[in-house]
Image 1: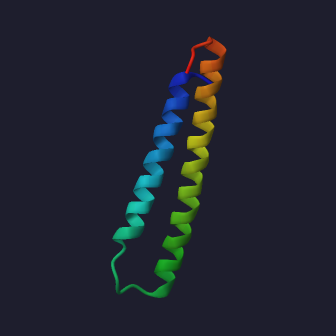
Image 2: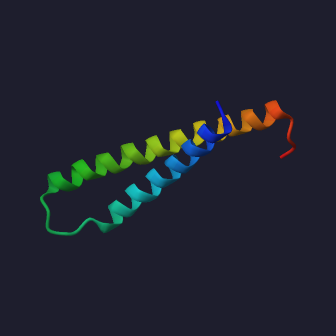
Length: 72
């Protein structure tokens, strides 16, 4: 994995987590229960997916750093 791809995955994961948590806090009252259930599931799935992408990117970045021999 290249350094650019690893950094992209970290940034994408952080953005996804921020965006979906922000959506969760901004859901307005007055919707049916099904609306909140669906959006709750979407939020959980996407936050987990964002965390997985960030971890993959972090591991890739560490791998690139270890390959190049740079001290960290």
